[in-house]
Amino acid sequence: MSEQLPIAVLVSGTGTNLQALLDTVHGREAEVVAVASSVAGAPALERADARGVPTAVFARAQYPDRGARDEALADWLQERGARLVVLAGYMELLGEPFLECFPGAVINVHPSLLPAFPGVGAIEQALAYGVKVFGVTVHFVDAGVDSGPVILQRTIELPDAREPEEVLAALRPLEHALLPQAVALFARGALRADPENPRRQIVDRPAAQTGEG
Ligand code: GAR
Image (tube, rainbow, N blue to C red):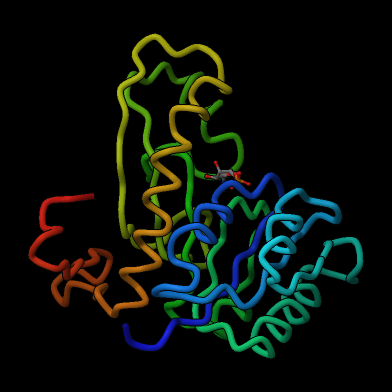
């Protein structure tokens, strides 16, 4: 195995996606070198503590504005040596100056089949629309809201779903598979933009994995 990619994970809540990363790619393709939360006391922080990963809280209210928060956050992640930033249930927007600190190296997991239902309450939006097929997207982060190039997507048919909790429970395993898979692909240098359409990410997979995802 070649060198592990140092990654930072940003969280705001429960941290089940962080846990999936800690249980799969951490210590293999990647090393989680920092976990930052926008919310003090988020359960995700305990998951990082349990694995000895350094944590910090960058709450919006601690800073005069979002830019100052982003700067402090980027400084800490760079001090920790992060080369990929993974948003795993991080419920804040990041400005362009932050993204410029990690060019092409910020990814997010979102609980819908983008470009449908970006932003907060994706599952509630999908239920309100009455869709029969739900999905998960892992994508690069740009300055828009859930608008960056798609890395991986997966769907699930839930024609009778009514409650957000039910949909979330069905989407969890998809997220927990897709996000670590995207991190591993990034760490292996297996993602590249299609020169004919830079929004389209070409995934170079080992022969045995062709057809997955
Ligand atoms: C996940 O479902 C993730 O897709 C979603 O928050 C949840 C976090 O769960 N993210 C967004 O909605 C971002 N727009 P977790 O804290 O258990 O990983």
